[in-house]
Image (cartoon, rainbow, N blue to C red; front, side, top):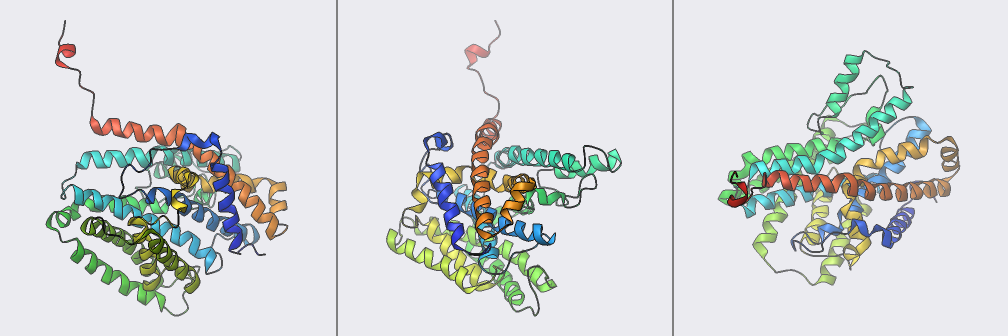
Length: 411
């Protein structure tokens, strides 16, 4: 058994699913199957967020040993995080391009962006606020830089991820690592939301396939160049690999958009559930067995094959229909944003860290307990912060309530 073995990941996931099956976690239940086009995606997000957590759990081991926040060994440990993030980007492309297609390229833009602010903002601010507390604790609750400089860096963090620069605060090196560096993806999400408006004419004119094909061709060429870049590794990237990483993000959005168009074009036609689940798992297994990282054209297309089959209704032999899987997906945004805080707090305790670093079994046991703590905290975060924010966003989109004329008239 190694810290970087694959099978303990499945034990950890099983432990989380068993915990979420307990009646106390019914508070995370949401209506089932509100939109049949996204029903299976409602069971997938939690596995993605938990996979990113396990990726960072392995990264944390190297950080404790070497003092460097860097990729774990190539293969399964690295792919866990990259697959999770890549599919998250595909989901965003699928959902929001689908909104444009359904609205014939003319959605209520104000409502869309207000909804995004209230969906992303509250939990993001909670995570950043807790990060500020950790920074204050680690810097002895004293100013180590001029107050104006500290305030300026804090304001950059408070920009909801729209501002890409998120610097160290009060001289604490590695401030962003307290959140496991996950906020970079939110910046790309905002870029995609901002690009929707100039892309809207494409949705109106029915040119989605040509637009996606052209964009994908450029991305796949960049990914091919990155895959064959000599001497490049995730921890020592070349220019080609960096360009390939950006192309991977863009390709993920584009492939999600393509799935949104295909699902609406194909209507109800789909493979039998058993065949779709088998083929989806085959695509996913091929990614993990055949590649060391996601920056390459073949693995991106294989991952899209998995994603598209889930969009078409594959439940992975019922796994995505499990009540505990849906509960985990409901709180997946909180899991994603709070994972670094959970790792920071758990491994900051000296006795816990010493126990975990004594061997691989101890490290995985600690990581599993950390995952359980993270998911439980995420359920609380969802109920107290995330869900009220979503509700407030709905109210803000609908505008102020108008009283009937008889009630509104002055006495």
